[in-house]
Length: 392
Image (tube, rainbow, N blue to C red):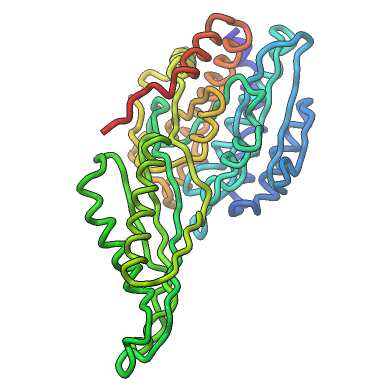
């Protein structure tokens, strides 16, 4: 079947490169990816997919489906296509989304032989508020057997783990007064804010080394001679598991509560961005992808990249088995979120790697649909994923 897959990719290659380059030349920020989403939709429709646009109430999201003649498992490929401010596709989402759409189309051409269903889901705004998180919460992946995507990088690497993240905002409300002539009549919101940072700094000694807490003050007063009546701080709290994140978030909130109590302010606690779960890679599914990537001609697959960042694919990985490996778009070291990374995403080297990744994704999808034992092993691992111990 690998020769069939290679032939289908060769037939599609020009269309896929055109898609990636169109999106590269038309960079759009999160939830504004109208041209990019439409380009994916048009190609998927051309190849026989039924497409729901404006999916889940998101103007630039879509869900494309195609089924075989006989029922079977559902394989999903997730496409991203948002860009970054100023530098365009410095994270390579032009080629990332193209790889997912390409894998979906290739697998769809095999469905008359193997049955099952393939779904391509367009997921906006990964760089900001991450559409996959609300999608996962609202049941989009409940009928999906496996979800896969690959991200461009400077080397081929296994899917690893990322940190669970919660974005917390503390708003402190005090009372103004003249800071020199009547300071006793004021309630200093900035004091509460600063002491929250001090409390968190003391907390750091007693948290796991893999955790991260980092924050900024976004409002701290208007003039030095006025006791600040309003202060606002924003924090990211990251941990290797959802469970430890929840524990740590409560401790951070207590740091703010104590500081607010000491200063005499009112305190409001909110989430100012979407929270991300840790990425729980399904190693059985990953092994399947690795096998086929080698068959497609990739000689070396590096071990998983340890990430201290957070991705919305993490939320998906707690709803259905998922992988998020990496494919090389350059033979030289690259740094993400740079113009150099963007430029590398439209080179012959990148397109050659894209072809190999598409083949590996499609062939892994074939195994999921045809091999009941393989899928059973994937699902057994998924059911036991929460027994994995938190890393230090």
